[in-house]
Amino acid sequence: MSTISAQDVRMDHLERTEHAATARSKATLVLVAQGGAANAVWSYEDPYDDMTAIKERLAFYPDKVDSITAE
Image 1 (cartoon, helix red, strand yellow):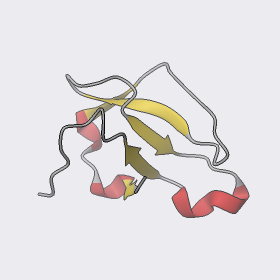
Image 2 (cartoon, helix red, strand yellow; image 1 turned 60 degrees about the horizontal axis):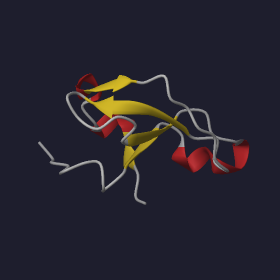
Image 3 (cartoon, rainbow, N blue to C red; image 1 turned 180 degrees about the horizontal axis):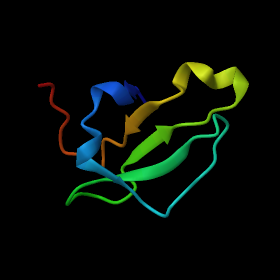
């Protein structure tokens, strides 16, 4: 799964959900596209020290997101 910098994402189109999950990277599944699928985006806000390369990066589940476009 590829990740995208949070700086490159229109965060105003996303909102936090109550759902959270922890993986090896200490990622938290917290975002939903407005009007879209719940829990469709992983947010890597506070990864473990050995995973800092993914800090503040997002990963979108391809089965829950129709498209990602660049502006």
